[in-house]
Structure formats: C-alpha cells, structure tokens
Image 1 (cartoon, rainbow, N blue to C red):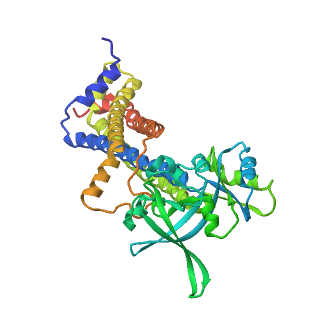
Image 2: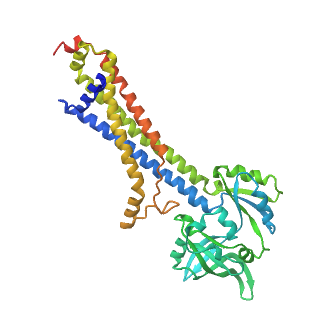
Image 3: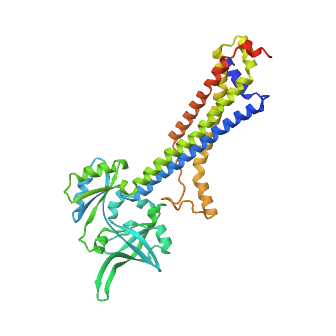
Length: 411
C-alpha cells in the first residue's frame, strides 16, 4: 500500500527504540503531561459547568427569577398577572406573599422564609412539584394552615408528613399577659428535596393563610415571573414596571444570587486558564524532545538528504513524529477526561458518605455536580491538537536546515 515517505519515516521514528533513553523519556513525559492536562481540564470544566447548571436549574428554579411587587396589598393580583404574562419574555406568573419567622418543634428552633402561594400558579414558575418526596403542594388550601417544607428542615427538626409545627412571627401581639409574639400551628402537608440550600431555608403555605397571619386583606404582595432567559431578568422586570403605577417596583435573582453566579463564572475562567498551562508545559516538552531527536538523528537526516530527500520532506518527517505524540496524548486525555467527568460525582459522593466527610457544607448544594459539555471537549481537544502541531514547526525546520556534509564530517 502506498504511504508517503515522510509519513512512513515519521511513524518509524516514533516506534523505534532509541539508543538515547533520555530522549525517549522526555517524549513519554510529554505525552503523559498532555494526557493529564487534557483530562484534568475536561474534568474540572465539567464540575464548574455542573455548579453553573445546578445554580440555574435548582436554586433559580425555586427562588424568583424576577418579581413585580407593590407597596400595597394587591387584592386584584389576577389582573396584574394577566397583564404581565403578555410580555414576550415571560413564560409564567404566580402571586406570592413572603414572611420571615421561626419554626419550633420538639424543642428545636430554625429560621425560615415562608412564601404564600397559589399551587396552580406556582407550578408555572417553580420546580417544586417535580421534587416532592412526600405530600403535594396541592394540599395547601385556604384556612387549613398546611405547610410544605424542605427535607433538610424536617430532618433537622425530627418531623415528617402530617406532623404539627409552630410558626413564630417576629411581630408582637398585645394580650392581658403582656406583649407576646404572634404564632400559629401548622400541619406539614408536603416535603420537597431540591438538594440545595433552599431545602433548609424555605417553606410554603397557602396565599390566603399568609394574608391571615399578617392580618392583611386577601391578596398578594406581588407576582413572581418565570422567563425564557434568566439573564434577561433585570431588563424584563424594569421594562414591565415602567408601564405600571409608581407604587410598583421590580427585583430579580441577580440581587440575591448574582454574586454567586459571577463567582462561579470567574472561578471557571481562572481555573481553566491555570489548568491550560499544564497543556502548554506538555507542548513545550514536545518541542524539547523533538529538538533532541533532531540532534540525535543528524546523521540519518544527512543520509536522507544525500539520497534526494528535500528540506520539505525532512520537515514533514519530524512534524509527523511530533503530531503523533500530540494526537496520542490528546485522545488519551480526552477519553480519561470523559470517564472522570462522568463518574466523579458518584465517586466523590461515595467517599463523602463512606468517610463521613462534609466536603460541600460551604456550597449551595450538598454534592459535587458534573455536567459534561461536548462543545468544551471539542474546544479543548482542538486547542491541544493545534498547539501540538505548532510545537513541531521549529524542530522540523531546524532539521530541514541540517547540512549533510557537516553532519557526516565526524561520522
């Protein structure tokens, strides 16, 4: 079968056992370094993508992406919801009333943010119905004072479905015995598990029950929005409010979790840059190993030149050799990276459980996420291959400049 001479000799040089083992060692180190660099870069980027995805899908699936609120209770909130829903970027609208308080049960106390909701509307803007592990948000009905809590909250208080719990509000109520805090007993009618910090800090009650607790007319403080693009939240919310009376104001997720998202993006960029240096070091090793190969093969180059090989042929021979190192290292690294990225969540989760570690207590989720994006793999592999190819140019050109007479003078 026909095989170009430069490809044939380049492949032969790559497979050949060299008398100078140090050169072989440098070439091996270059290949291993490239493999590890590509694998680690794919794995770490997958983990950062996982944090990014979990923030969007879980945390931002529970907290409001954007809200339109009023300084007065909205007794006619369905009219506002209908008007807001006409905006081109709004995909869902739901009323809400928020209040802060403390939950007490069995001598345990925990702070909580309670949101009054209408279940049929809430399903349009929240992911809570997809993460119920017991009960249902449809059990939140006016006057029954049911509450839906996160699994972390119920576990910490030692409670379960249909247990009773007391909500204490930070408002004083005068009584013959003096000023006492306002409190109300609730029944747990649902438990959700998102796997994020919201499990331990958020609860839901019926919208009208929230108005009753706050001693306000039946209505809502505002409406929360689900958008087609969360990054449009600031402009969409402001655009909606500008057409409403002055007592309306807007808010969005960037006020509460914007810094966290920015931090993840910055960490992703910086970590990617630092890890990419590993790939660059491996590429420089390819340069050094090829330079030493050229020096070691000067007599072979001279013989090839005397047999009629052109400088271009010599250049291609060593470019083939360096490119093969780059291809093997890059492909091996990509395979390892894909395997690591696909299994790292399970492995770290098992280690965390087996050894009783609490590795993720400082994060907004309680496990290590990983999300492999094939476009990232393609970019990393492409950059690695391009850099590996560029690394062969200088040694190959140096080999092509070898003068046969001078190289064979002392042979």
